[in-house]
Length: 384
Image (cartoon, rainbow, N blue to C red; front, side):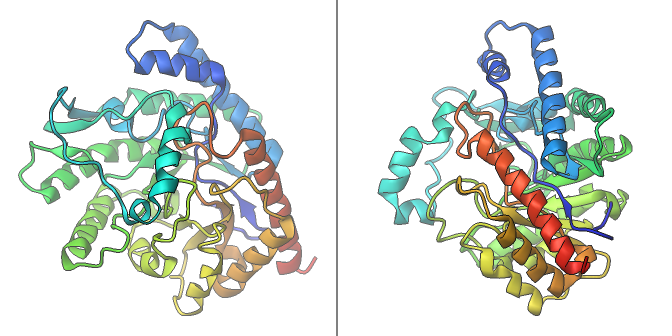
């Protein structure tokens, strides 16, 4: 994994908006309707090539495929892991989860869910239940690897990464006897994807929104579950070189008040226990912009890298490059300039949707601002 040895490098967290013609084909596929498989494969390949070129043109140094083949991590499990079945029609799966944020702002979230970007996604998540032994299906990751390799041909970048889900599954389990057995079985299966990514020569990014903890829940049971999930993830990452792994977490994926987000102070300890060389987290969201102060009393372990978000998915304002540079310098002064790469807070289209919350033209403008902010920060940090 490259470091910022002579300038601040830039990257991002993964997901980018999909093109309409690809979304149309995805919608047919996900709904079980007839679709042209060759056209679908070609559309994904073309979309990956386009977003790789646009990342490089926008000044992103460490790129990925924009997650163009994925409708979102909600349906990721159904495609890549065997051992799950759709919940039967009419079967009760429990009441909807209402968090503290929605309880505090019911009017906002009633409107948000009614007209928000989730209403324009190509496929609603299919509730799944684990009913048998979990195993891995490799076809999807092999397709992703081939498309990314083809897209990178002739494009000037520093490195490329591939995101993969963590084994912190939310799907209900009726097969394994304990949550621990379930988590470790998922970890052992998804490990095959991790190895395939690294073996192909790419950096592996583990995606774990919210880390393995429940915001605001500091009970002994919550801490025990978090410890178990971290152990399961590290089990999945065993024998994979640490310098090929980056870990990403965010505090929330939606536009909203976000007053019940976890804090970096709460997250930093558990996050640094995860086997990785680099750690990506929210920093540009106004709820978290002040949190660089955490590194005034938390020492970054030797050899580690942080990837604070310098542009956010939480609004459509394009951050000023001078603010990005200032924030980057704040982190660099505390952890060392060579230990900082800058990115965004979270994906700009974590779901395949027709109407992403951050408009695609705005997202690319944010990347250009990120690159200019990195240039200004490099000028200040290397005194040139």
